[in-house]
Length: 310
Length: 271
Image (cartoon, rainbow over all chains, first blue to last red; front, side, top):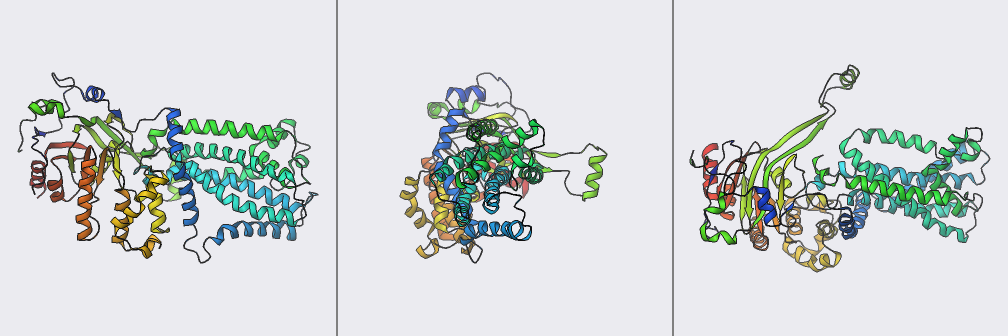
């Protein structure tokens, strides 16, 4: 009973819904008291550069959290982590079955299987990054309300998680591309900068939609439709150049310049000698990556102190 | 009412009555007319799809977001070295208050000023039950902001404190008994020292031996920390571990004073 430390006496106050007297004599206002002892406002948004530094300090958590989430996905299955490889393989098999064997619709595209699988895998990366980014705050409110950390950790971790999945898919992809007769050349190294730009772009989108969905949950229902529309417009299944030949110039520019089409084009150019990338795609890829990341990062940071509210 | 001198006692006079000890009283948490509003329940709640559609078409004004005014104007100051118990019924705003102090929930108005970064004791939300205990120790520590080197240094100590066998620590946490899991979670959460520590019902876990050790640990943390807030429905724990207590009801402060007296008044009201 007697574990009372010291002999501190407190003037007891029975507060009966009487508002505190503002500016009462001889007693400093709470704000002044806080200022006098150098107390900082709890949960206030840090300056942008401080925020970046805090986020850098959490880099190990970002990677570990992404790895753990990926592994946790498959722990209750019999095959376990084998699914990380099996999922992309089965994906590719489905597309081969439908487009390669049943429909035989190569539409005059050389090495259509590789063309298609690159398109599907690369677009899926952006698609999944947007979807998991959009739920990274809204779906983790428990975590947001329990621990203090820069909130951008969550959307970034969700993108890293998708990147880890993609890297497994890329191995499968390379095998398919080689098996369909493409030569292994030095240009395969371009895969690295291509995926780097796409990852930066995906991080930007994940940050944007993490904030939007944290306020408007309906976005989570709407996004899959928007993403599917985007996929059909991004040259996953066809060559935009041939398909949109008769379209107005503006429409052609929009179709070809859209970031998803650009990143798909880059990877096709890197892996497939039969589909060299147009020269305009590299500057465009860098442009979309930098702009989207910068806008997304600042946009997300501006609501940093409010994500706990739900 | 037991305490009647409230009308004349305004904010801040706390310091004046302490005579010679004034100089030592360093505030660590200043809560200034704090209001916290939660946003919950969207899309007009339940009802079937047709009814909801009709509402949208008819443009009936309806509440898209329900707001819960959980904290309604709290003001108090906590000082270094204090252990403060928070009592109140379910839904009175105790946990919300701790989250607001920790900066996890933004104030709707008013402000919370703190020394350093207050932390809630608890990492449950960061853990993944389908992974091994070992992975969760690493994950939980990183989530609290430790570096990998710090995690490696603390790892053995955490596992030893949780009293989990080497064989069990490699297993998925889903295979743990609820007591084992609670021990491990507490061991992870309490591995780090904090300036201002906020404990939400963490003492009531595990078996008797573990409870004694965890109370011991809380006391250590409290000594290392500047200030401790403890939310508990166990009034005995509050009386034993805290000198001061806040009684919160419907988001407002009912009473603020020595733990023994506040607990007594609280028991008197709800016996």
